[in-house]
Length: 412
Image 1 (cartoon, rainbow, N blue to C red):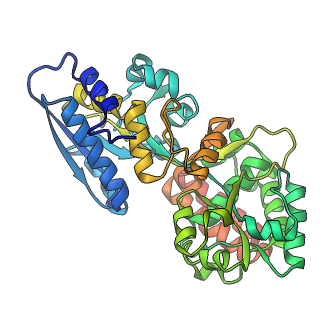
Image 2: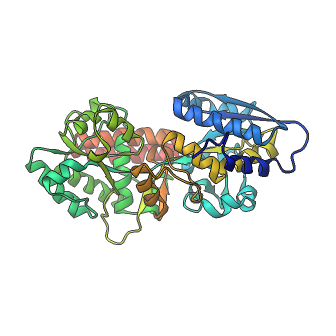
Image 3: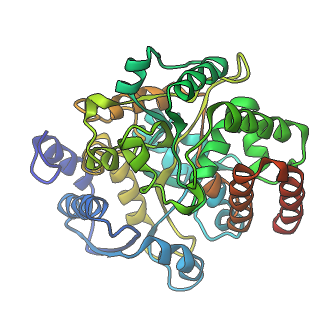
């Protein structure tokens, strides 16, 4: 596929986007990822937009993601850019509720790409029946596993909870720890919790919890932790996981001491860097726990928003419509190894994990953003600390849940 900067498909897109261009005007964009591939993909999209809209003077700023998290509220309240990056779901809620993001429902209704090809992710961009941003990328979570170990032990991909527990028994009988994980930075434990809760209770209960509408001591959430305790007993995780980052936890996966990893697709590159071949790694959806429960998936997304006090709103909407186009979405996500939210965008069909990811997410009943995005920051921090504590000592469950109820009462 040719670059969006040079290819014929982009030439058609540029001509379309240039239609009706007026006198010179401005657009200021704030991005938040300095890693090489995302940085290059953003810069390529901006250059493509400039080529398609020569009448618009574009200023593109990029900065550190963690710093962006700490400064975005100030930026929105003061000298805001015209377009800014942030997260969908409950993480956008405080800014929506404070009137700091602009309602762009009109763009979603009028733009064919948004109105027709973003159905799966539209709920996570919506609040109060309105749409507030445009996602440019997302990726699947699930269970990555050592296919060569499964083959050696005569195991197949489990589709139910009982099948996974039985597979764990076989692994442990053969000296293999079923799961690796590194919880030093906490969020990896949240990924396990999210899937257990989505499979035990479903998408609506999961969202109600992260929105502060039900308590952590609720019987339904206790059922999630009961399943987690079973997982700790029957499946088990590597020792000393609280001392390891997610990258360090790749080592027992790569050397064959552990066979599975509940993780996002971004980890595949690290698995290959650790010496594994693509033939040794495979992926399956986290198994069904409650029979018949609609299958929701974990699919963190990154999106662009228009601040409520943006100066150049018309140009900002042009940029969001440009980013929503299938050509731009395809090139952007090919460059960063992730999935385009636009269902009409081409994907890298040479990457089996991208192909499986698209199938997984396009057929899901709902898409969760990830616990530390779906829950407010203070609640997420306390929750993830509680998850790690529980994993290290399940007997602390009552203390953990009581403390999370207390924090919930303060946060919401």
